[in-house]
Image 1 (cartoon, rainbow, N blue to C red):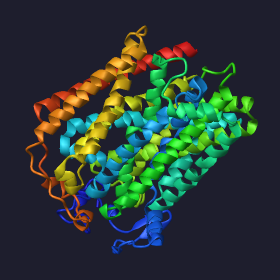
Image 2: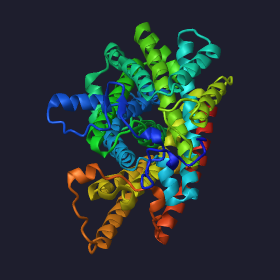
Image 3: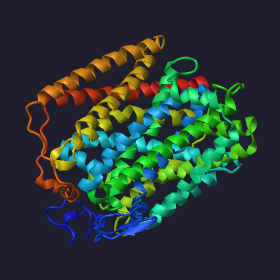
Image 4: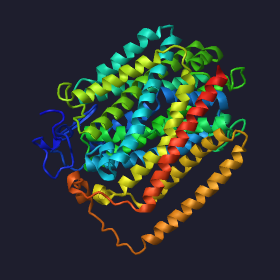
Amino acid sequence: MSEREPLEKDSRLTPTSAVLDEAHLGDIHGAFGTIRLSDVAPRRTWRRRLLTLAAIVGPGIIVMVGDNDAGGVSTYAQAGQDYGYSLLWTLVLLIPVLIVNQEMVVRLGAVTGVGHARLIKERFGRFWAWFSVGDLFLLNFLTIATEFIGIKFAGEYFGFSANWVVPLAALILIGITVTGNFRRWERAMFVFVGASLLVFPLVLLSHPDPGAAMKGFVIPSVQGGFTSNAALLVIAIVGTTVAPWQLFFQQSNVIDKRITPRWLDYEKADTIIGAFVVVIGAACIMMASASAFTGTADFGKFDSALTIARGLHNHISPLVGSIFALLLFDASIVGASAVTLATSYAFGDIFGLRHSLHRGFREAKLFYGSYTGMVALAAAIVLIPNAPLGVITTAVQALAGILLPSATVFLVLLCNDRAVLGPWVNKAWLNAVAGLIVSVLLVLSLVLVVTTVIPSIDVTQLVVVLSSVMGVALVGGGLWLWLSQRGAALVPQVPRAERENWRMPALALLERPTWSLARRIAMLTLSGYLVVAIILLAVKAVELAIARH
């Protein structure tokens, strides 16, 4: 069968199945165990439950640790160097954002068996599919480049030339992915996940100030005041911690691992564990950097992750500097693998190609070819001399934060689509939390846009005004939604056993939802705003690059 032939022809797929690739059906072969397709016995003992969790665990932890990638490590370290402990509170607030967003994609993946990009294309049309995936491809490619920036800096810290460290890392990335074996790839990822535990000796050896750290966690503030540059960094922290690529990666990875609604609770546990892992790791990096630079001449003068490593070397010890550089390299490998795979998965979704790590290279040439091509091109770009790599890294994370609201909007719409999720659609409280998340993200990006256009504006007052307007809009929208649904029929409760066996019908059997005029105007307004915000972000990045050179 050609890669471009309809995948519905695969022998194990039925005409009513939504799953598009035979490789996405069958036994679960996790890094730490196997669950047979025929295994439907309830888990009544803790031992059985823990063994099941061990087999399921993977997509949630890998996507979260991949989120603490080179850009993440650099951004968290910048927050510590430029603002001390004062931005630790942002990480606490991001825990529910991570869990809510990723729980929705986990549910979509397990119930539908169809990737995020394919669902957007089939339910909203080609325009919106290309709008969301076009943003994703651009952002992901830039993010992959930042992973190689991290690899370059890590190599330079130890005195190795980027001309061979970067190509070697690219070969490692290609080698662990293009194997045609999902379990082998997942086990390789867990080796690098284990190496990320170096954050604990990093923070312990840095001797952070416990009082200042506790204050930073519980009292929202910004050392030196909330300026335009601070807004850029806060958006970067949001963008690197809750990146749009995570939505596409985890949904497709859940499908590729063959997780169904029967195992959904275990995959949610995997996701929650991962959320705490990513935030704890981020906090350790931020505290180590704050401890090293507070009170020194280098405080507030972030340049790049390389200067962070050297600063830790000089202000604390050579061992701490080396640990940070190793963390940077490890984070870059995990991040590059996850982000590139997210892009290749989306590529396969949009063009109807085979896209599974269970398939060998000959069966999925375009899937693995797109992965290899992106890795090679991103590695080549990083070798361009004299590029402002530190500013590029921060700008890419901020771009992720700006694009996140639109990605979350599509996610919420899909999770309220009863034809897609049936009894698994969002509950009202979850929609309220998601609406609050989108509103906060829009306020942050609006702050960046307005302060870039009007640098002299009082940022604190701007935040108060925008938050008040957004709050009124949220209350008004919630009231309108409540009134419009008062007369709606109650959704019948579905027994648990039936829910566990409910899967989305084939996409061809579903009628595309009709959008109201108000929804179309709202979505077009949001997309237009995002274009303006991206342009102004580029202006801000250029200004910072000029200021630092």
